[in-house]
Image (tube, rainbow, N blue to C red; front, side, top):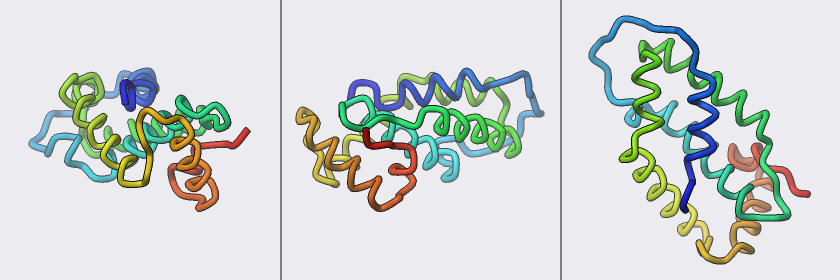
Length: 138
């Protein structure tokens, strides 16, 4: 995926406000499961919505989730600068892209075949999964 995380990252960066807390010794955000997993779900849903013409993303819902995610990261003591560094990092984007591609392939998606993204998206919508909740069949 060329931009698996790009839209999700843009939403999260746009949601970052002036909140700053004291720096403490914490694991990198990529190791905080509730942050990483939620961002991953939004990123995968975004990619499916971009690749499949018959499925659209629920962008406002995704934006709301990311806004809350930013607040949660702040609640855990991460500064806005730390959040920005995480979501804007080229290394993190590449890591998330690889993780997303691996996940999608494990679910039968062939990255250069649009219909496989559509089939995956329709299955996620039918299951009412976290990913499916961010997608809407047109």
